[in-house]
Length: 509
Image (cartoon, rainbow, N blue to C red; front, side):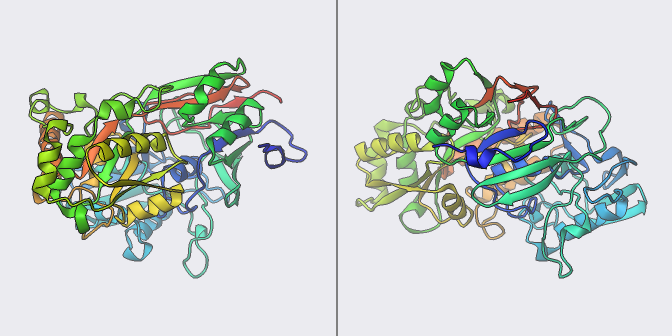
């Protein structure tokens, strides 16, 4: 399939960077209606007070510095003085306060509101966000939160500082006017997204690091082309119509490795591939049945389902080295095939059909689904694969409307941030996976722990509870592979794994 008609712009004065996306944006409203692909794109357009650096720690972005009061309840941020919005307005504290108050308004329906409204499992409550002067903003919390700046830097739940003109006169979202190195120029749904360099972008001090530092946009235009089919994406790369393919499909690797015109970049990210098990309704609400399913699944065999890419086993929500060593030995193994039949009898399973949700568009999950299906059928479980597009699967995930779902979580910089994605109260967030009272208590303890060693021990306790619940089965840490044509200069991968297009140039083509 040829995408030349889509990729070549008329009278293009300089090369554009052309990137393949497996799925389209969910919206242009940062943080409100999002998924990982939406985050990838919007991190080039909008910025927050702080961001994650290459060491996965919070670092200054729109704020040049911050200080914390002695009682730990006040955080005061000093803004950089020379930052411009993409409509030419100068960034001032009033827009920071406006952006935060908008996100904290329940009418905005921000999915991460529970992180800050006192109703979430962390119990963090922002009492006020105030403008002290043109360049100073103060947050006041109900009680100290050791992870507050980490929360502000979280990619999936950070608050983008946007200009009020991003909304129309009626208060509805219109278009993002951010402070990032690229502005969103065009979005043709289902076809492509085009970013244009923001020439008045104000470079931060220090070298580029993660999402911080000097994010210099060299390429004037970045066109992100929606190509859900892996074979079509491969052909577009091989023909030179695509320059960059993040999350390259494993089945494309043999042919790509033979092409001298491309380079394959490997990165071990903090992403996590899992099997989710619905635990609230119908046959899947039976904890013993969930244990039986878990006991039948060989994680090593599933991880090997795609022979062309390494996928290290990862049974836990965080890398094993993040968990206290003395706790690791206490975490029970899910895979125990000798117990499957006894567990099925104890569960009273009578052959009810169980569907496995999977999408062909993301990762290599369909290969995983074939292996999972075979293992379950061999164990006597009436499993069926339900293949769907990614948008449908993600919607079903958000509503907890599945039985089994092969799914992936984008890596977070810290363990507490990762666990907060799937360990939570379903009365507050429908897509919660693990919701036992003990798990919720441990999450609250983790969020209050001031020392890393305390959090490390608590994460071990949490993994023991997750293993008992058997609502989420950790499979592997996918090795991210990015295909880069050799005409692309300066593209780098990093631990968080999300693509960054600043600092990248393209030779003439």
